[in-house]
Amino acid sequence: MRGTESLGGRLRLGASVGDRRMLAVLDKRLDLAKGVILEGTIHVNQTTMVHPCYGGLYLEEKSKAGKAILLEVGHLTWRRSHIGRMAIGDKLAFDSLDVTGPGCATVTGIENGKKHSFRLWIRKDMFELYIDDLLFQAFLTEGATGRLGFFAQNGTVTFGDLRAWQMNV
Image 1 (cartoon, rainbow, N blue to C red):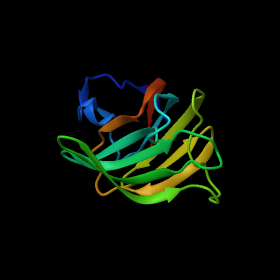
Image 2 (image 1 turned 60 degrees about the vertical axis):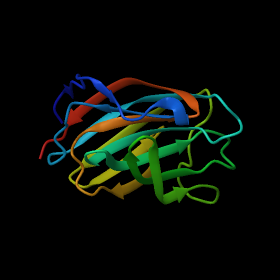
Image 3 (image 1 turned 30 degrees about the horizontal axis):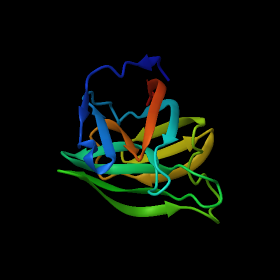
């Protein structure tokens, strides 16, 4: 791998926070044909106990639509996390395609108030997400554009120590 890639550029607001959800997308496109590794930390503080809280990542596939990975915040025995399609309109619409939860032999989400590390490997139309060095899930995109985003729902989500590497072919 080569050195870190700058994630510079502006964040675009994808939807208002009026529906307790927010998506911010990087303007910069990363070269997914060669492959990219994005890593950093995620720290979530849940702001309500009434509605599910999520922090997550977004991979744009076309204008105003893409795959989203929503990591539920909560106790290990009941939390569920999703991978699905997210559409950006007046509100963010999410359609779950796969879920991990109780009984799954994988990471099922993240803990409230705890800083977790993440690593996202993306190459062509496949990605893998690791949380605290454990595989969350591998999944396919439908023509990711190379633009990545960050998601929050019902919580204060902080992404930190972000670094990206371009893979060598």
